[in-house]
Image (cartoon, rainbow, N blue to C red; front, side, top):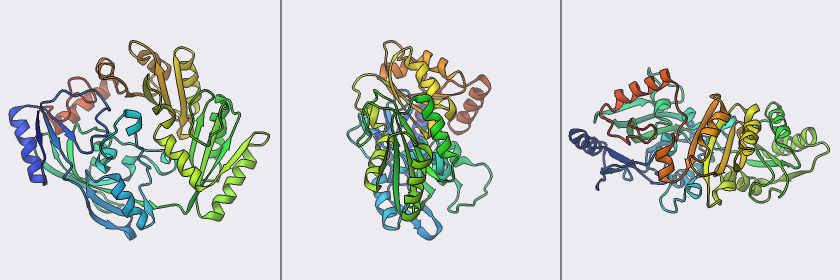
Length: 401
């Protein structure tokens, strides 16, 4: 295996140009923590992007940061914390879930996979904070898109196209993101003894309230849970953030309005940070040694319905995030790990993605939700436009593409 380690965008273009000339595919790697996502790759060459690291421009007053795509998220967090700011899309850390004990998460990796944490229901997805980039396409061409201002109109919104492309369209060299002020404090209301169907209604009521809930999750009985979530009971967790007096008022208002007659626990800032970090990192399912892990996006009103329909047919553990719109599911099932059954339960009204599975399983079943014919044709045309010889992470998302 050949490993290219470019130090500039011109060297990156040369490395991809060499692969293009030889028509030999390459794998794009930075921190390496997401190599277990998508279909397994079989490529003779690796383009190591770790040298594209470091903050290039940061204007706290403008809420905009530009950095090398391989900049570790830990370095960004230190700089943002010093200015009282944050990446509002709350990128999750799936190293524990994927068994990646080495490597560091990078900003470009989070954006390329469009990974968003529990705050997505309030602040939007990673793609909504992705303002601009410079990159090298599969044509070995350097190109830029977007800009370094929040309001920017330059034609096609290519950052949103790159978000969620898993490195199959271009190698990101530099990215610009919108940042937001970090909340002064956060607090959580835990409401216990809630049945799955009632949990969806309760979370919908919380999100529809004037209390600006920034996290809404449900952990059913039987699913491992992070401390201090009570054991052996279905628990809804609701997070509020902001100035201390406002948070205290809203936390108690949520308890009084939604937990009447139910067991409720109020958590402070430190416990809130811990529990929502674990929910975003899928900690309730990460410790299960066996089983495939699926990430299922559905309408929030269907989250519990889909989860229970699947759990009636296979041995599964699950929990809900995003107010019921995100179902995390661990399935202990031979064969296709319940792929056909899970997608039948979704019924074409959502997306089921295999996040953790053996290389053999990820090669045998569609990892991402199969696209309808017209959409699949459009995706192929986009791939052809950026990478006509299919040399960048080929097959990671769709077999043969």
